[in-house]
Length: 510
Ligand code: SAM
Ligand code: SF4
Image 1 (cartoon, helix red, strand yellow):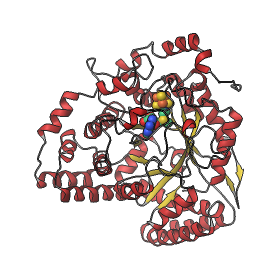
Image 2 (cartoon, rainbow, N blue to C red; image 1 turned 90 degrees about the horizontal axis):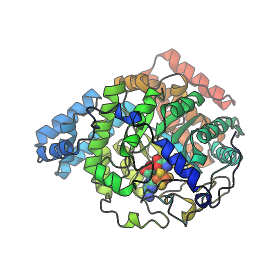
Image 3 (tube, protein in one colour; image 1 turned 45 degrees about the vertical axis):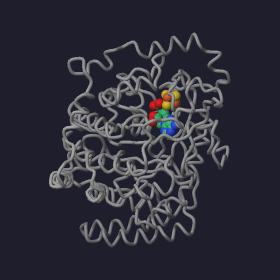
Image 4 (cartoon, rainbow, N blue to C red; image 1 turned 120 degrees about the vertical axis):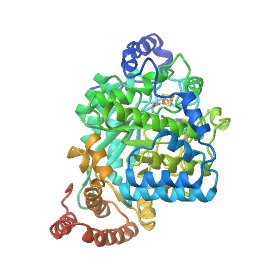
């Protein structure tokens, strides 16, 4: 186990070792060149812009035929089809696109929203990304790496709120390398806290960290990593190099671009890709995400489990954000989400608490499948009770800090059921298998039943009276629907399971 290390002035104390470590991270070109075709990556900028230009001014018939295809096939769209949607100007046609995006979401994922919370374990970082408060040159940020006891305390607080899924996050640094990440996962999975009737525990830990080698990813797979997330930030090469300085590890576009290829090769079934909106033209980024998804499908038979699309947020001493040339407006954000939804219909789409409540309300129906509540992103914030935000502890500022209980009530009032289910993963319904089940609609029923069971657990163990009331109403409606959908014996089993949960039994699933 890693011991607690004093990390103050880490940059001043470590440079020679740090430099050596940084160089050692990037010595094997083969870790990405072998996935390339004739030495070229899958982002052909010339081709992407050509597609966007050639499909200008589409007729309404053409747009509608693409919408129909997205609704019926559940496969990725062809690049020219996505480019066509990106060229729509008519606001009424956009309304049709928004409606179709919502329909795809409902067909594949129903009215379920999965929830999670971020857990920042360390903000030590050797990189210098211009948009991030944790960049190594930013002297105003308080640097800290949580000890494993502190990680445990954070996880206990989160499990005590009712969270079952976390996304852990780390800067890139030898003190937060794959071994440290592995230790944090072990600690988090071992947490168990008392709740009103049952207990709280974290059942799935997703990881957002720097790209890794296949050996490192195999080690994390062994421990039970959930989704491995790394965002390319921007697929546009020149922009990428301009915001990620060349003397950093992150400055290597291809090491990052192919990290999901390595993850899939390492057997990590669920991979999450993403872009940071505000760095480059959002339409180009949609095409980049599509190309990335298609390349993963082509080479590994499985696309991304999730797509994320954070928008730039203010961050301490980070003037890049205020001056960003490609900021995405709320209206374009909606268009981005809807076109991604139609272009990669089977993927989960993550909306985070970076967005304020009014934006979340508006974009949720366009195809969002996961969102976080009760999030605190300062290092150590959950257990040290920082109720507000503290810029110099955070990577950026959040737009919505509502607690989980309030978030669940808010969603219930809009007709969404929050799923805390992690059964699919634990029964091997991951990767290619889950993709097939999602595309054919077969996962829908399993998920619906397990969503009801885990929601009930939450209501019994953690909900306020007000949320419990709103939640019970959601369950009543769900049961009416399920009764029509499943054989009588399954419905009766579901009722029996709900009774058992009321009596204090936990972790029952189909
Ligand atoms: N250090 C890891 C890395 O760079 O991949 C994890 C970073 S963090 C948990 C996840 C994401 O936050 C980054 O990949 C980036 O897209 C996003 N991010 C960074 N700075 C941001 C800002 N100012 N506003 C919004 N999102 C930001
Ligand atoms: Fe480090 Fe990640 Fe921030 Fe870049 S985005 S400076 S890699 S924490």
